[in-house]
Amino acid sequence: MITVSQVSKRYHDRSVLSEINLTLPSAATHVFLGSSGCGKTTLLRIIAGTLAADCGTVMVDGIRVVVADPCPLATRLGYMTQEGGLFPHLTAEQNVTLVANVRGIPASERKQRLDELSTLVGLDQGLLSRYPMQLSGGQRQRVALIRALFQKPQFLLLDEPMGALDPIMRRDVQAMLKQVFAQLRCTVILVTHDIGEAAYFGDTITLLHDGMVLQHGSFSDLVHRPLHPHVTAFLQAQRPVPQLGELGP
Image (cartoon, rainbow, N blue to C red; front, side):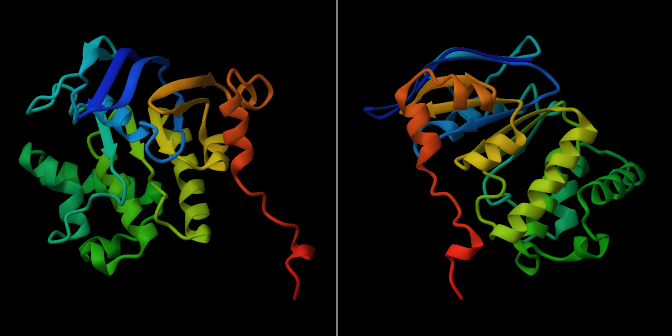
């Protein structure tokens, strides 16, 4: 379980997060939803231990998250940044196994884990010898996901993992992630600004606005029991897809 208590963060004179309180149960997928600049990524980074809050605490299974090197929760948290964050000078395999190599995990165990995860995320192992620039966007996201999962984390944190993908590739990666989440049953926090994506993945959805939690609950709660006018405004803001007959020849 992840517990966020009275977490606030300011950048210079601007409040980014204001007294955030959340409880995120284990073995579920939690979505942080909201417009750009609302504080989603900042909150995710604080939970991941890569950014310190100005005040408040985050607890992961009773362990307080702190910014430290090495991170006390490093083996329990898998973190995937926007764009995947792959090192361009390393091959896909070198990116994935970098931390395992540093920790002295035997080559046979690394190979077995790489085989398992390549199959799980649907990545052709022949692509592992390529550099990130030689891979498609969807392939890079699969490599980044393998890296986040390599240490068998109990908690998986994903920051806009499909934000840079075209619609067809985005749909493919969404389906892959849904299957991965179902198989692993780890606790997932996924950041997105896409309403459809939030509804597709989220057991719970946290809608943030101006650094505050406007509502936390199921997608049905947001649609049918909004707690703030901005909840409804945000859900209605995304332009609907026209019927195919309306598109013309």
